[in-house]
Length: 374
Image (spheres, rainbow, N blue to C red):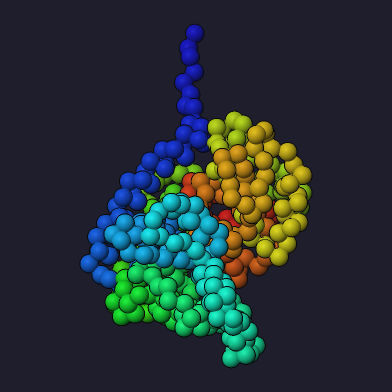
C-alpha cells in the first residue's frame, strides 16, 4: 500500500491569523514615525491606503492626551469617528468625533448660551452655499466668539476630505493659535483627492511609503487606481483576487451567501471578519434586501450599516466604510456603475480588504475587472 501524498491547504481562518501577525510587525515599524512627530509641533503626514495613517493618528492623539494636553482627534467620516471613539473610550483628556459632530456640538452649546441661531446667521451670510461644506463650518467659527473652551492639541485623520473652510475654525479651536500641536494625516492619491495640500502647515509633509494593511495581491490591485508618491507593497503573501460571476442580483446574492457559509461553517472564519461593500450607493437598498432574505449559519446574522460584533456580517457602502478595514471584503454592486470613471470607489473599496478580496458581478463585470487588474 502506498499512501498518496497530498498537501492540505490551511483553513482561511489560520491564514488570516498568520497575516495579522505579520501586520503587527509592520505596524510597529510605522511607529518610528511618531519619533519624528515628537520633534515637530505641527506636521502633515501623507500616505496611500494601508500605510498606517489612522493607526498613527490614534497613537499620536493618545500620547498627547497622556502628556496632559486636552486633545481632539477628528476625521471626516462618521463611521470612522465612531470606531475610533469606541477604541479610545475612557481615555482622559481625549475627545474623538467627526468634524461635523464637532460643528453641531459647538453650535448647539453656543446657541444655548447666547440665544442666537448660528446656522441661520451663516445661511444669511453665505446664501445658497452648502450646509455641510460652508454654512455649518462658519457657524462653528461663530461659536468660538461665544464659547471659551479650546483644545491644547488637535490630530486630524482623513485630512484630504477637509475643505479649506474647515481649517479656520479648527485652528481657532486651539488654545494657542500659533504654536499648539496640530497634526494632519492625509491620503495623497491625486487621482481621487483634489483638495489635499490646503492644510495650515507650512513644512513639507512626512511621507509614509510602506503598505502595512493589505496582502501583496490586494495592494497591487488597489494601487492600480492610485497616482501619487510610490508606496511599497507589504511583505505579506496572500490569495489572489477571487471572482464570483453570476447573471443577476439575486443569483449574485446567492453566490455571496454560499461563499460566506463556506467561510464561517467550514473555514473557521468569524462572521465579524467579513464585510460586503456595495459600490452603487444609490441602489444600496436593493442589494441589502437581496442578501437580507438569505439565511446565515447561526449565530451569524446580517447587519446593515451598524457597529459590528463577532457574529455579524456587515453590509455597507464603500463610501460609508471609508477609513475602516476588514479581513475579508466582498465587493458587490459594480454592474450598475461605470467602472472606467470610478477610480475613487475602486481604490477605497479594494484597499479596505486586509487579507481576502472577492469581486462579485456579471461575467462581463468580472472579466473587465480581471483585465484591468493585469
